[in-house]
Length: 440
Image (cartoon, rainbow, N blue to C red):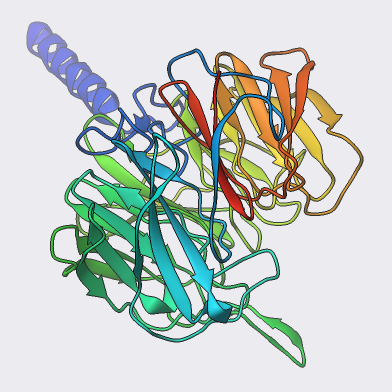
């Protein structure tokens, strides 16, 4: 009998240990979390918002770190209209969007990487003309490409897919966007779908801002045909962000950082997986990932959140590794490099270096004189250096790591709100009037 009881006890202990091993790891970050790479040869070029990495970190070397409006300018060409979409690149082609005739004419442009010559331009179908913020334009969303088609979001004008010769392959009307600053979020390619979310519904009234949602959604379209794969309604108000897709090894998640919260969806079905409270109103920056965490920044003086993905339901109390309000941005996205997370408070021209594992402030400094809403472009890391470009076209080249040091200050001589693209040792920069190639 004693032996039987002992055997039963051992079996019970084995069952308990097995159950503990199979439980979700809510106390530790998952080291395998990473961005889902772009399809086809997307990692070879600059095929999407924030480049191959999806978070502004560039592989390779040989990029110049000094320039002016004349020095190291390989070529420059004028860009018609107005638009702040960042350039994307595939093969010898650069793709941009622009707005003309007060937003009534929205156009996709293709330029040659070799000499900057205009290859073609294609107008989007006519549609509603939206109101927008003074710094925004109807052509602020950055396109994306898989090398077969270029995908463009024009807000109330819908989503377009064009072949690389500029022919419209399909056009999908997603409904009118009611967003008092105008749409700006960029589409994301995930496998054979193109995903976008549009948070809307807030408007100005006699009582101030109405923050209740009215028609917010996240949707996936078939990349080849434009047919809807899924569409999920969202209880969210205004936002201008771009989703990211992350891999946790055994499954992928679609992360949407928005007003009031961060949410995760199954990118194949649109099913909501988890939500994390903590964001403030008006979210623009795109999340970044590393160290098993998703880093989200939100709103005017909102917090920076470090969240462990992989949960279910509301994970606010279980999956927030750390949070801080120090140095949080309004417009530019953060950049993660090594153990350091860099954020730009564009409301006061302050850059903050955080320990990505703990959230502790490593250093915090001001770039130039304090200005409100003075930085729109998102930072880039290449060759172990951090590049921060202001709206005035001044780029601060900083040393990465635990010590603050400005290595160079470059002035392109023109207002610059778009983020840069980098391929094969060449910087491609869009100012308000021109597209430039910067290299030796």
